[in-house]
Image 1 (cartoon, rainbow, N blue to C red):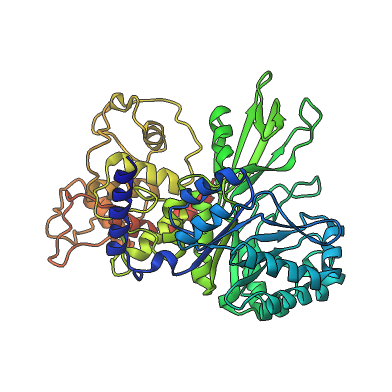
Image 2 (image 1 turned 135 degrees about the vertical axis):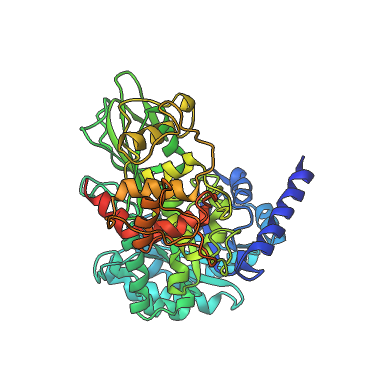
Length: 543
């Protein structure tokens, strides 16, 4: 079975290379690292396996600073794991942590010369590839000591080994507190890169606002701050969270535990939503997802050892759409790549698309030369159209009537509504029944008969025009003439086609035809949706 999987994976890899618009080395074009902290060393190899070759560096929790400011090699270090990573071509760069212990952090900086030497010796002894310094919670008065510690590490650690620094995200340019502890510019003079911990925009505290772990604006401003401070682009690594945060909206649990921003693994969010019939929404402004649900009396749900009991809850979390939005930023700003906190908490499908989106190849079957590339990427990021899989869009595949209805309901922000009545007999048990019935109820579309919709039939160009005409009610002069040789004055679709045509949203072919009964493809729908985006947003904002 293992050999079969290996062959299938090789075929997929070759397919991605052949179809991608980016260079052959796209999987490693932009840098990607992640931390190993959860699950224990016995599971570290499985966690790396799950990334499907997406990483360049793994950063396990091998180095701690104890209360006296000295280096502790943790029990999690295993030489066999290091050897296996090297065999795979991955670097092992453990992170050095004080785990928010201020005394350990400050004592380590006071003892920085001895600490730096001990780290350099451990790197050599265990055949490691460097160190990632992650000292947190120490105030800005120790900023220069921290910078000097990195200078010493760079002096003692061989030049072919990595010295990197995890730094607090600083979107507001704070100069005091623990954010002011990190001198971005000077640190970058000694470090190979800074890993910006661009998460915890909300945090676990009654003082935290209820909201995203990392909104898109928080993320962008965190990168912009590093650039403004003079950090070279090739020394900026942008960190993504693989977790969400949960709040109880109506007081403490029955055990008198207040849930105010408690961290929750991305792998557990869907479980909670499914078990308690949660309502999922996507916030366009922050490009983040959130879910609300109610635990009824007598039921419970565990986050680790914390028991959630009856009441109303909200989770802000990362899903495919929000992560894909963040994966656009390294290319947008031309920085080195990404990091993440932490393995074990990402959903398994994350690695199906991570490397592709990080490297600007959003769908393997939509190359940079495809006529609809820009339109497809636009509607994908808006969430109006999704891929057939996380890495394929199938641009030339015909749209079905069901798919067209779902896309429009989603784009117009109506997906949370429910139909009052069900008219179509051929939709019972169909995946799109509610969206189609809702679209009928809103006056967007008609069936082929009073009780028949024919959901899997292809959506023709003229049918799509009629649906859009019924939604947007574009004005049209009386007695309008056809602009197309194959749409006669008495054809039922003349008015809707010409109304959309006069808006500049739809056109014909070079031979002067419209081809009304031709199938609408997914690529054509993507283009049309972007062209109509202002009108779509206007309708959406009316409610």
